[in-house]
Length: 213
Image (cartoon, rainbow, N blue to C red; front, top):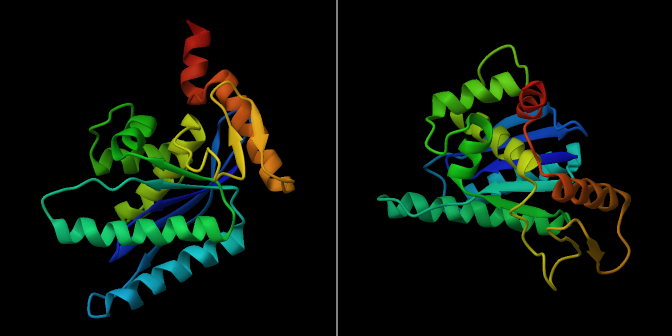
């Protein structure tokens, strides 16, 4: 399964793409940070980031998008602009007919580090280790985007549009239902999701550790 992870941000938006194989091993495909200048009008900044996301989807053809959910913080202006970027990412997922998953920051941190309160340095180190990269991914926005993609590859939940508005739905028991004929990519995605729901998405290293006990 090829997954695009989006770490929404107006000044820096992380875009990370991974392949997750049948053994739940993650492999790096692409990572970048889309930037926009603070002296630009907000709608032009959003369009700049949107075009980066669209270009990544069209070039690498992911099968599902995973986005980090925005939570209210002290800086209301920052939260608002981040939600704008989350919205355009979701819109691009719809425009390219991609299934969409949304994960909380604590879910992402817990998936890659084992702790829902891990710091950015811990996330960066674990992303480097999981993807077998030569060096730590910088800036943190890039590492976060990859972590968001890894999180969905291992968890397989958080999918949106799973009711009447969804093209394809995979139930918690692994049953596949669809509205209309699916593309080959959608079929592969649905089959992978069904297998995940039946067996549970698990970090392959943890599975090996359990087997050795």
